[in-house]
Image (cartoon, rainbow, N blue to C red; front, side, top):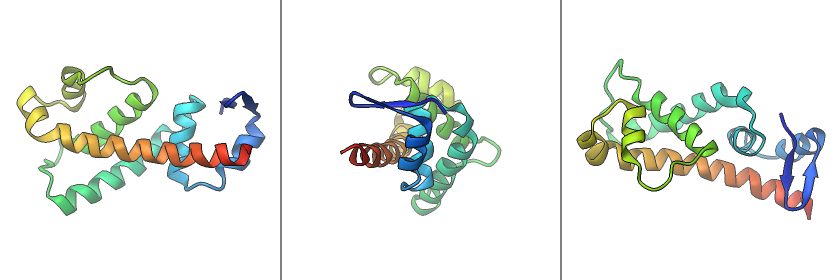
Amino acid sequence: MNPARVGSVMLTKTQLSAYLSRCPRKAELAYRLKYCLDDGVRDELRRELMLFSSGIAATEGWPVERGKHTLEKMAILAMDELRNPVSGDNWQLRAKALGVKKKGWCDVWRTKYAVVFSELNDWTNTAFRQVWRMQE
């Protein structure tokens, strides 16, 4: 894990680990991916996102086809965008990443992806607020 800058302060790995230990695990993972560029958390974070998205999919009746791995692709896309945001509504890149055509993206997956990405962003912000509070 790389150290992280919070405001004008550069935290050591030890300090950052102590601050993040007070967060939910999924928030810690998201923070480490975004701010520490720690690719070692990707598998665990992908599983957390898939658990979240599969719960929403079951509750809301998302059209998830067996064998298509759409939820996994959505988790990977969200993690990639957390690190390197896609500018604007670049539906082509997102649709390609999910393996869907324009109609499928616009009619079905755009809003579902937004839910997953928003949740991942919330996890990151939860950890960021915790680290920021510990600095005060």
